[in-house]
Amino acid sequence: MAKHETPLLDELEKGPWPSFVTDIKRQAEKNPACWDILGQVELSYKEKITHWKHGGIVGVFGYGGGIVGRYSDLPKRFPGVEHFHTVRLNQPASKYYSTEHLRAICDKWEKYGSGMTNMHGSTGDLVLLGCRTESLEPLFYELTHELQQDLGGSGSNLRTPANCLGQSRCEWACYDTEEACHQLTMHYQDEIHRPAFPYKFKFKFSGCPNDCVAAIARSDVAVIGTWRDNIRIDQAAVKEYVAGKIPSNGGAHASRDWGKFDIQKEVIALCPTGCMWMEGGDLKIDDAECTRCMHCLNVMPRALRPGVEQGATICVGAKAPILDGAQFATMIVPFMKVSADNEFEELIEFIEKIWDWWMEVGKNRERVGETMQRIGLPTFIKVMDLEPIPQHIKEPRSNPYVFWQEEEVEGGWDRDVEEFRARHAA
Amino acid sequence: MALSRDELKAAILKKAETAPKPQLYIKDFYACDPDTKPREIKNVANDLVKEGKLMFWSSGSTTMYAMKSRIKNEEGDSGVN
Ligand code: HEM
Ligand code: HEM
Ligand code: SF4
Ligand code: SF4
Image (tube, rainbow over the protein chains, first blue to last red):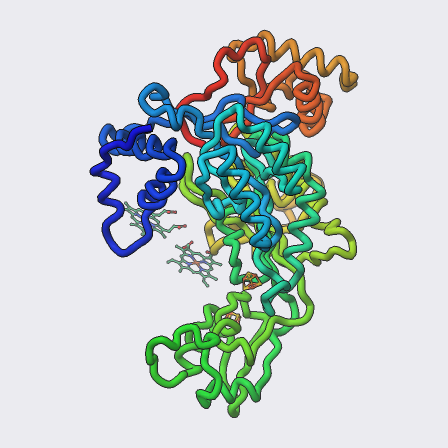
């Protein structure tokens, strides 16, 4: 396949940052089909219209997900991208691979596909870009049989769950995110590999409110570690931070001189709920007011640690902008025990209650967050068998209305108001 | 009374055969039996795919169901994924 003139794309190689154009050119030296990616994208830049066709019936036997069909609408002109399907591979929890495994995957991909990868896609999967239809089955066979490497989710499936490093590396993890991610992935194999819903559904696991997998912004169910007792304070270490003996933020900002550490300015004054103060050289926290924002813990990790009564906050309904704008997940359950001891029973029950409701009332191509917005939070909370609590309110006056149900009112809707007013003047 | 599994399969196939558009959302099959839970209808539709009577048609972001004989082109369309 011939090279194409790509003056517009070449612009993207200028400047100090890495360039996907350079990457594709390098791969094209190995696999000439990749020249046609550049040719087709150049044409799209010129004509300001896409030449990719999406979707179709491609897949591998027994699966209804993991492969996303892509075709060129100019196959004669760009034969190298006539078929250019995407293959999603389920990443291991926390993305721990051996280099041996990665090399083996890349070897298979050079054999059957374009050799181009996306490490990793935003969903979490390891994404292989560009494969012909007839290569899908042999690739899938070798991946599963030789490398024990399964596909991830796509379409109206449960998408590949993802998690932060959690307890494998991080002292802040309030539950075992890897165990939760792995166990739920295994529990829901059918939902991951075959369509199960009116649209996509994702859950993601972060060990603490730093939320390193951005669960709250991207997942229909965000499981975010938290604690419900008090932040553990080591007052001796606080004094060392104040004296400048321990670098703040683990030394993360040490490349520049920010001056002497000022606990008042850098911690206490930045606490979003103003619940911290110094008293006789000791740091005090009114934990009932703390929103678990993690700021003070991030600045002084050796002095402050999450409490010991640990679990997770469950937020529901995030989505990226497609038709509507982007939406963050809404806090639904402030504290849930998340534990392998009972096989994550409480979480699983919660998730399936959402599915039963959403499958019934959700519209086609409507994420559960949009269904919640359309039907209203009071209904959602009721469907989930939860009691409304003040924390369900986003901000005063935006959604504070919790309505009485007829069965909760003495005498129901048909009560004799005249009789009531005789005793209580309006 | 909910339909038996076989009756439900027959109703889903009939719908897939006669619907104006060849690709159907899972929700389009709910009406085949209002007494069966959506997740069960999904399981039956997926079984029909396993049996080779229906097939999946995916845009990349949404998966639909179709009768093999009614899909002429293996390719999709341009649009969002
Ligand atoms: C042309 C004249 C006026 C215009 C265009 C106007 C417009 C508005 C608008 C757009 C709101 C916000 C409604 C909402 O988001 O809930 C509002 C609220 C309010 N306005 Fe006016 N207003 C006018 C005159 C007045 C006058 C003369 C008064 C009082 C004497 C008044 C008292 C209020 C009050 C108390 C609210 C708050 C109501 C609530 O949020 O419950 N407004 N007004
Ligand atoms: C002892 C006297 C008063 C009491 C106890 C009182 C109490 C309240 C309460 C509890 C609210 C509801 C706040 C909310 O839920 O957002 C409210 C809202 C309001 N009150 Fe009063 N109020 C008093 C006097 C007045 C007076 C004299 C005025 C006007 C001249 C007034 C104008 C308003 C208005 C406009 C609102 C709506 C404000 C808003 O929603 O943003 N109130 N009041
Ligand atoms: S989300 Fe919290 S627990 Fe997980 S890696 Fe990030 S900081 Fe650590
Ligand atoms: S975690 Fe955030 S809200 Fe809580 S005390 Fe620290 S800074 Fe304040």
